[in-house]
Image 1: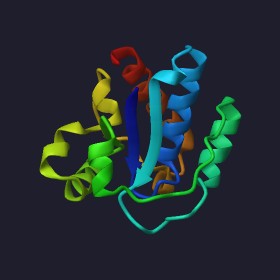
Image 2: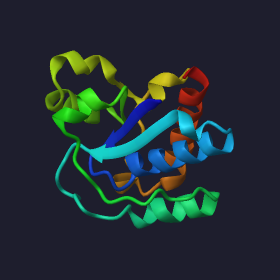
Image 3: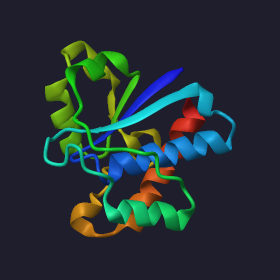
Image 4: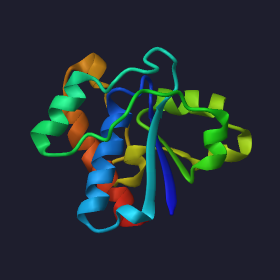
Length: 148
């Protein structure tokens, strides 16, 4: 079973969306038993919070079930536990590298690094554009499923 941790700043927008989208995609293609998928934050600001209302609304609009979740912070132990540690942008990656041990750093990458157009995924907390974020996350999750 591949263990994947999606990570963003607060764990209420992008990483939670990625967790839900990936779980839904894996279930729809009959591969849900192949993955343990979770999400976490690099900060402590939103610990215990539910997913952002924009994330909830966008997933509902797209017919993607929201994985029940409360924001948690990524830990050093997550570096050992997960096979892939997937950040949403370069700042997430920098923060993730400060959390994990050096030997686990090789497991860290951005979600869109799996696609033909590697780049950051914009944070809808700031942009307000949950549709653009959803489209990027969907693209990245599909690429992971194709490569694993």
